[in-house]
Image (cartoon, rainbow, N blue to C red):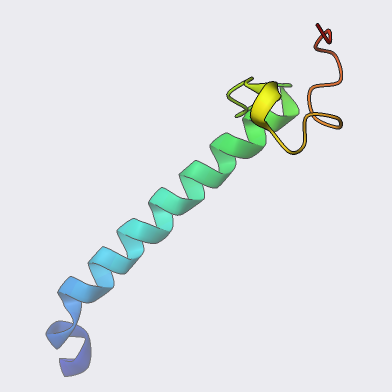
Length: 59
């Protein structure tokens, strides 16, 4: 019990970071399932331009 009390601040910070990371990952999964992309859509300079965003018309 004394160890927990001595490290309570560290434990709380770690738990908060785990929760924030989990929320971010869930948000990214939700966006991926709904078809949203994190791409900046600057396909000219992207090394994956041939495989990414296939629905975008090539100009």
